[in-house]
Amino acid sequence: MATQGDCNGVHILTIPFPAAGHILPHMDLIHQFVLRGLTVTILVTPKNLHYLNPLLSFHSSSNVQTLVLPFPSHSSIPPGVENMQDVTLSFAPDFVTALSKLYDPLVQWFHAHRYPPVAILSDMLLSSWVNSLASHLNIQNLSFSVLNANSMFHWMVKALKVRDDAFSTGVDLVSVGSWGLIFNTFTELDGAKMNMIKEEFTKHDRLWAVGPLLPIKASSMGSNERGGPSSIQQDQVVAWLDSCQSDKTVVYVGFGTQITLTKQQMDAVASALEESGVRFIWAVKDPMKGKQNGDDQNVVPRGFEERVGGRGLVIKGWTPQLAILEHQAVGSYLTHCGWNSVLEGLLGGVLLLAWPMQVDHFDNTKLLVDELGVAIRVCEGLDSVPDATKLARILSDSVSMDRFREERNRAMQLRKTALAAIQKGGSSDEALECLVEELCSLNINAEEKEIKPNNK
Image (cartoon, rainbow, N blue to C red; front, side, top):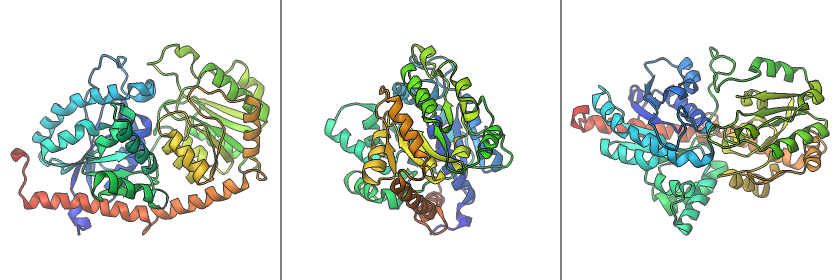
């Protein structure tokens, strides 16, 4: 068994996928690694460097290093775009292809490094080329999944049945070729599906559930440094929430960093918020650069903000979602049900109102609503337009303690289970300790074999 001393100086290269919903939990995982004595080099392109600010402000440069390489050009990716939040989901395969061009520069960097990494930690979406890179360098690659095991298992089964080249399903099967798989989830929720992945796909037990990964909170951070520019700074948002006289009476509306709404959808949400009479915060992301008719995306209806007066906030750009969901004034969350948002809402103790739109959102909603009974389904589909009057009623009911009481109680119990998992001795804490021990043992094995950079 590796000790803390064995881990000091053990070097890991990490390669996140350039999307906010992937980079941020990836950095939260790296934070846990560094706290346990590992040294990490993070591959990042220039326009994504700011996502590392919380991590870099918390740890010394000797423990966390950056490898900044230019984003490789790609004929389908608009010039200057380096992050998926600026384009639609259909661009994901193009981003993977573009980043694969960093293969040779990484080989050169590895051979030139005095203490090269003993393993690579990459986003699951990049496993198609990072597995080959790791094999070429004679080290191991671990894939980090921002999906839970429940969704990943369903995608794997679908990929086997369909046997097509669809990126969204095939990438899961490719990731099975990684030396290990890491999930931002907890065994009490996802253990059964993890066992099924082991038995039917990986044929080994190097799978770790280490979540929910808590966000890095460094005192030296600026108010919105975890994300980007915002129309309202975090301290102003928190001050507004503090002014709310009753707990659990504010509805938060947000659809993540990837989803944009059409004019019809924006009108429906605005009408529902206006008709409901609830206090609210509405996160409106910037329009995408890789989509036609960008002027029709995420446009707040004219006069809406004036009509609702001080009853709500409309935040354009990056939204301090964690601070909002953790505030006692917030009672419910209208969400697309991306897994990161689900975990943040769950830990915040709010009632989830599910509007699944794409990829894993549907699996998450089925799990939360139909199997666990901890959330309310309000709409479904990327192009669906909710009935404004019905949505208004649900929004109003969601901040009433007399409605959805059973769902709230079950959600709070699940929250307790999740928090217990990450406490000292909990299932996720122990899994993380075991994972670090495995990484440290790779270093010990490398030393025993006298592996040197020039011999790779």
